[in-house]
Image (tube, rainbow, N blue to C red; front, side):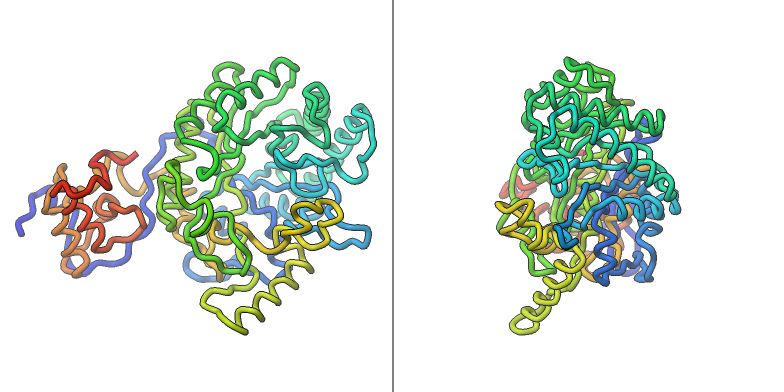
Amino acid sequence: MILSATAASAVSRPAAVRRDIAVRKISFNNPEFIRGMDISSVISLENSGVSFRNAEGEAEDIFKILSDSGVNYIRVRVWNNPYDKDKNGYGGGNSDLEKAKIIGRRAAENGMKLLVDFHYSDFWADPAKQQEPKEWKNLSVSEKCEKLYDYTKTSLDAIKDDGGDVGMVQIGNETTTGIAGEYATSNVAKLYKSGIKAVRDFDKNALTAIHFTNPERTEATKDLADMLSDNQVDYDVFAVSYYPYWHGSLENLTDVLSYAAKTYGKYVMVAETSYAYTLDDSDGHANTVSRWANNEGENLLWSFTPQGQAEEVRDVMNAVNNVGEKGLGVFYWEGAWITVGDTTNLSGSEYNNRLTENKKLWESFGSGWASSKSAEYDPDDAGKYYGGSAVDNQTFFDSKGRALPSLEVFKLVKTGSVSADVLSGDADGDGAVNINDATVIQLHLAEKLTLDEAAGYAADIDRNGELNINDASLIQRYLARLSTEFEVNTMR
C-alpha cells in the first residue's frame, strides 16, 4: 500500500494501542461557562461503603477527581425533611440540608462553586410531583411564601457558614407545572419571588435560576419564559432539563434557550442532562436507559460507550454555547450514582445474595432512588417501586468506582483532543474517503500501523468508542453503495 504525505502524518509504526476519549474543542462565548455536575447522592453512597478512584485506579476523594477532570461547579438538591416520624430516610440520597452543607464544603475545598437546588418538597419534585413539605400542609399561599423565604435564607446561611461557596440557587426543581403544592400561575409567581428575595438578601451576587423541563414542547416552554416576564419575576437564569431520549433535538434546545436569552436578556443553561456509557445494569435495579427502555430514537446520536457519553456532554454544551454569551453552562445529573454492590456477572444464589445486601444498604443509608419508607409521602410511585440506582450506567465511574475516560470531557471541551473539522471515514488523513481508509483501519487492527487520535476518531464510523472490523466494513459497504449507514461529512 502507498500512503500519501498527508496520510503518513495520520499513521505511524509500530503496533496499535487503545484509544482514549476524542473530544472536539468548543470556543466558548461565555468565558465563565459552567461545566457542572450534580452528585447529590454521594454522601449516602459513601456511607454505604462506596469509594471512588481516579483514572489511574488510585483511591481519591471524588471531589478532587471531579475538579482535576475539569468540573467547576457542583449541584446539590435539598429536601426539607426526607424522613418519616421515626427518622427513617426516604432514600434518593436522603438529601437534606446537612448533606448539602457537607457537599458544599468539600466542593469549595476543591475549588468548585455550588448550585443549591431547592425542591421545596420532602422528596422528588418534577412536573408530575410538586408536593409541599409535610410541615407546610394546609398553609395559605402567603404563609407558604413566608416559610419558603425563611427556609431558603436560613439554609443558604448554614451552607455558607459551613464553608460552601454558593454561586447559584434554584427556586424549585422542574417547576413546569407548579411549586410547593401550588399550581395557579399567580401563586407560583409569588413563591418564586419569595425565594428570589431570600437569595438576594443572602448574597446579591448569587444567581437565581428558574428550572423547567420538556423543552421539546417548544411553544409551551417559550410560554413559560413569557409567564415569568408577565408576572415580573426578577430571576437571572432560565434553566431546562435535557435528556435526549425524551427532550427533542439539540437544535430545538438551542432555539428554546435562545428565546429566553434574546427576548428577555436572561442567562440560559441546562440544569440536568445525562447519557448511558453502557446498557448493562450493575446493581439489580432497573435502569432508566437499558436494552428495553429509552435506548432508541432519532435524537440518540451517540453510542452507549464512554466515547458516546463524552460526545453527548460535549454536544449539549455546544448547543447551549450556540445561544451566545448568555449561554451559561450545563450540569450533568448524578454523575457518580454508581451501584453500592456490583452484581455484574453474578447469577443464581450469588446474585440474589448480593441484591439482598444492596437492598439493606439502600434502606439503611438512602443510597437507592427511594426506600420503602417513602411510601408515607409518595405512596403511588416511590412507595411501590423503591429500590437502587436507576442511573448506575449513566455515571462517569464504573461499577467499581473507577473514573471512566469520558470524565475528561469536562476538561477537553476547552482544549479539544481532535480538530473540529475531522472528516468522517478519513482514516488516512488525505481529505477524502476511499478504499485506502478501510485498508488503513485493517492494518491498524493487525497492529502494523498506529492511528493518531484524529485519525482514530475519523475511523470510528459506528461511534462506539473503539476501532474494529465493522468500521472498515462500513466504509467498504458505503463505497460499494450497499449501505448509507454513515454520511461522509465534517464531524459536528
